[in-house]
Length: 435
Ligand SMILES: NC(=O)c1ccc[n+]([C@@H]2O[C@H](COP(=O)([O-])OP(=O)(O)OC[C@H]3O[C@@H](n4cnc5c(N)ncnc54)[C@H](O)[C@@H]3O)[C@@H](O)[C@H]2O)c1
Image (tube, rainbow, N blue to C red; front, side):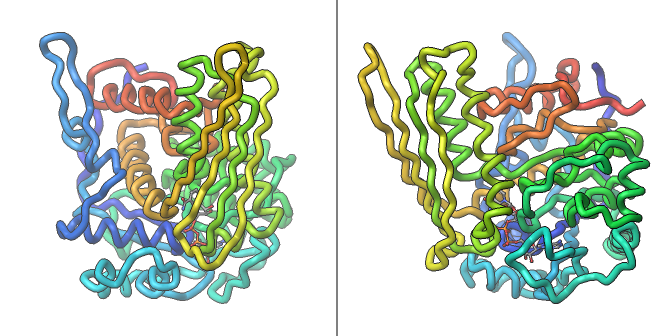
């Protein structure tokens, strides 16, 4: 498949963030600091990554942002929704991720980012009581109000293009239902206030209808159902998700492929976390944890391929726990106990204790996803963008395609697509070209 010549990113790219909490404020603050040269965008492929181009004697390595036409940090404008009225400065202080020395130089800009009232039906996030929310006569009316917000933001920011990246809370586990099958059924579900339509879906639907690429950073059922895929294709809009791959799952998809490369066997992998931020509080509700658990559990089976190596990976025990522990704030601790075995079946153990910072790991992914989705949109791609699996715990795929979890396989797919964007090679599967 070939792609159309990519238009240059003229004008302002508006980045819309449903949810102005720890991840979103860390992203906005970090971007403002990086743009003034007051902080380094560590962890961001689009800002620091290099890409190999050419072959043989003509092989050369160039910065990704020179290889493909990405929007520069100076041309970004941020908008947000939240169910609490705190501006980005206040919300960053509540989140407690960044120190005052990082907030002070950009305090004014942060304070000017005030969230629009959120679309919020509380049964999907039971631990939060929002005070800054929209009133609507139906879920269809809620979508109409979100669409109005998008248009107003586009106008006020003077944006030529928009992307939306979900940074709001994890919702209770919602299973796909009849309303998720076709565009007409979903529209009917909105009018009838179907309980299978959660807040995240309202935002995704509004964005797709407005032609805005949508990324889901949480495990929520937001856009990974047939009706959303059809709408994305019809509207010529790229979609990606879901659930940022940051701490423990990142480690799992780095270590797992290594164990398999050496054909070391696995008896069990027990993962537990303590964290004390608002995300942790929301996950303290068992129904929200179920959604997270599902997205965390899927990775090992795909990486280790037990069907191909039954004697090594045929019966390992995989367990994931998350404990809400307020003293830790955003400074999460993730422990992994890995029971592996080697030559003649002799047992060994590997212990990982990752003292990480959740939002510090997530912010660069949000920036990359916003810039790469804008690039994909300008390249004429629509529908699910499998090549962005690199960023997700539970990657969305095109119908019939298998999820890939191995971080290095994901990196190869991403780089292959970037090379295609740079005009070097045909486009790998993972994005549909718009007609
Ligand atoms: N930090 C990480 O490493 C990481 C990794 C993977 C996924 N995530 C996901 O990213 C999301 C954000 O994480 P966070 O740490 O910033 O959480 P957070 O609790 O600090 O922020 C979420 C914000 O969303 C708001 N919100 C909830 N429902 C809303 C709605 N319907 N409309 C608008 N706003 C709404 C909340 O008020 C809150 O301010 C979560 O879903 C989390 O599971 C985070």
